[in-house]
Length: 224
Image (cartoon, rainbow, N blue to C red; front, side, top):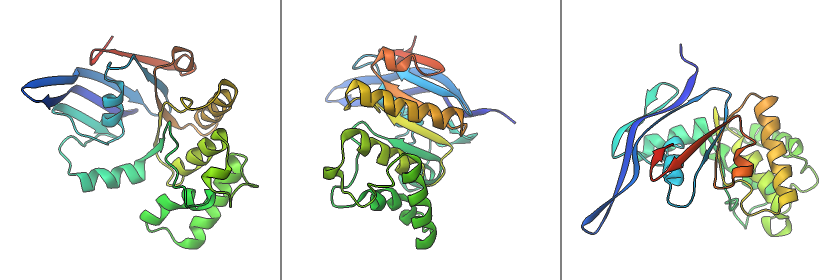
């Protein structure tokens, strides 16, 4: 048995730009252990967003292998990747990605609809998750009626609906003021320390990255 939950092994990602080949990732190797809180950081163009796509099963490498829970996902079709994402990875996005026409409770419930969870179970779990992030009084509010911090807390609750093995946070404080950003980081630390969640956070902010257990620094598509 291994305690590695995610591994990138000699991963390359190349994008054709006309007659030029752009190497976003250049043979990177990294391992993330179960229960770790890891920050992937680097400046714009470093390859951290592409690395996030690999870790989150949002894309497959041009060369190399990506393992999630010891399963090589490198050659899977998009439909299979979508199933893995739905069951094993929870996403927290910089821009929240909430549906504006749905209430908080409906936004959180949605991933469970795609996984065919019974309605009674969905409602029970959704209410419990929103209560856990302090939004029991805001469940029927739509995103336009919520603050940035509240929207991000809804996004955190949504990311937890299918009890994922990994939480992937893409610039989770990027659209928030510093005080609200600190609040969101406190939530992530609670999820990590109390619930033993594996958290992979992508950020360009060195101060935010320092709050993780371990930092992985990227530059020009390579791990420093």
